[in-house]
Length: 330
Image 1 (cartoon, rainbow, N blue to C red):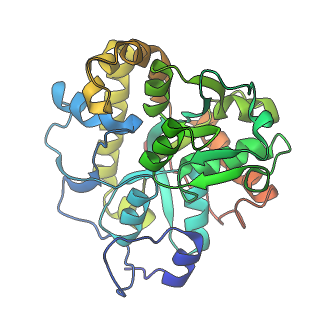
Image 2 (cartoon, one colour):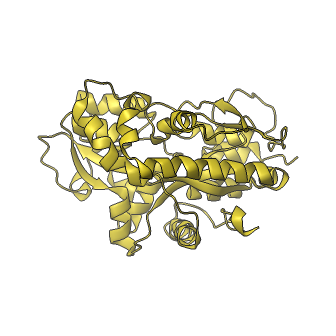
């Protein structure tokens, strides 16, 4: 087992209230064959439909999955680092920050493409994120993949995100409350919340993935996160990791084969039946959030994100090794 530097994790914001007191953080050990502690679907996130779709089509097979929910962005990553989870979503920048704190996290399978958006009220005068410099915006927590991707997309366009916006960061539900009360000029939020707000009349200013492309010229879909695990767990549980990779790709393939599933499972997203406009938008807006590829182009995007984050001071240094692995190449 590998003991992590608890103080370093506190400094980087990767160790939150995960209920382990003063105990050292220990790397998760391999569990029973075919059994894994995995991130559960959470309402209000794009991952919310993954479990119900897998169950609808019987994709889990003989895998024994212990589903453990998180309390929002950043929390499932903390649970992975503490050993409460074997597998959770993890972004490339979060993995790089973790490496600096002594945690060898690797992404081994597709997660989600970037689905972070800038939104304003319908009658807002603003037409671009640059118009909001100096203005108040609600954002996810600073240790979340969504926040880091917004920092990165701003940086490649010459904008210091933290310095040039009045950021009100916190839990997603808190940001939504601030925006819906009119206490902030804009919100930076994820799916399906963005689609729900648009269905209620909010206006989309920009997608973080488009800002990244404008600033870098990189046409590869911007990866928000992958399925992450400690490298030691993947080494010990290679067959199980491969099975989880196949499960995730199978769910994504079902979504691409029938995007209407996203509307059908609107309740899993936390979108009620009377929010008809939002429901109608789900297949179009979210289908490309669920990638099918885990290949060289994706890996180049992960490396570029980390290199660019180091260049702009968002991440202190790049890890010694890639934060991704291709299980099919083993």
